Length: 183
Image 1 (cartoon, rainbow, N blue to C red):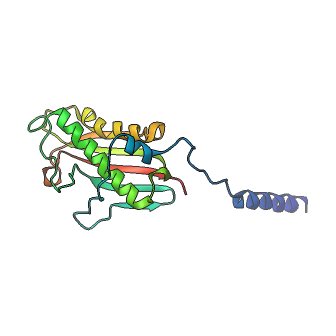
Image 2: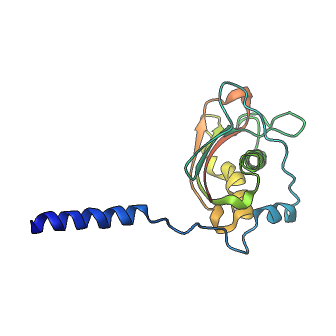
Image 3: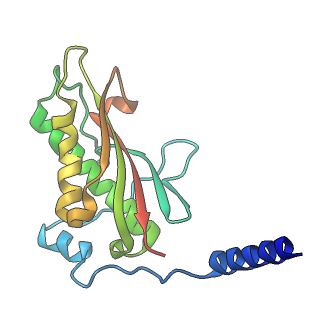
């Protein structure tokens, strides 16, 4: 009988603890990536549309998984070429930075407000590389540096920067992104 009572109490405590809601997290008062973009003189373009059978991003819970985007300019042209062959590290860095702006445009479109970004979680940077090119991290820094410039500490992320034999439409970089957001 005592074992049965203890088990029932344990189940009751477990049920109560599982149903209690945690307080809703909100951004810090001094956190304002939208204002930071203005300070950096960055105007977000319309988000680039998918070029095949996929969507720009998928939200599951508090995570958003953004599809790979490249360095597409507002006029529709792209920064193309192979690092170590056709374009320099500096040009690749600018391509990655432009890709960051495009990903921010997608995020803004999905969320309505970049202040809802809790943290940049993971970046996968793919660099169109000559087989002898080994400076992919320097190229993808163009993306990472802008994330930190816009989001501060919340912009620091885990990352992979890898070389690829080719990328769609010969674009210089393609970058995927995982973002945690506030409710």
